[in-house]
Length: 123
Image 1 (cartoon, rainbow, N blue to C red):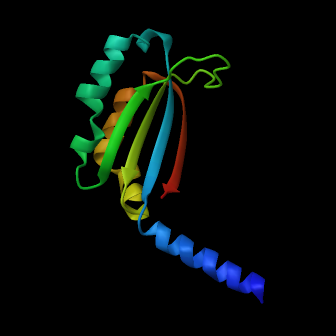
Image 2 (cartoon, helix red, strand yellow):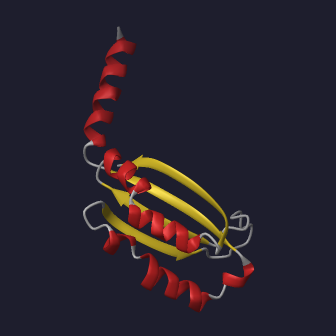
């Protein structure tokens, strides 16, 4: 049946692509107003967070950025984004409960008013 051949091909292609991509962990952050100073946040991310340096065997890539306000900005109150990349889903799961990640979350506990987290596979 054509549908069965198509489904096998799609599943097969997806399996191949999944071995070539990375797992992404995206965090949108809303900081309390007292912590919205650009200089303080730059220092926080550059000297305190440094997730790639904290966990070089797990984190393939780590970056953070401040949202760019544009017309019709739909970021709600989220001002910053953090993106981490991992080789495997198991690496991502290990990262989520890793003591170094827990330390970063503890550092940010009083700073962060709200966050939105998403994890996905990217090829």
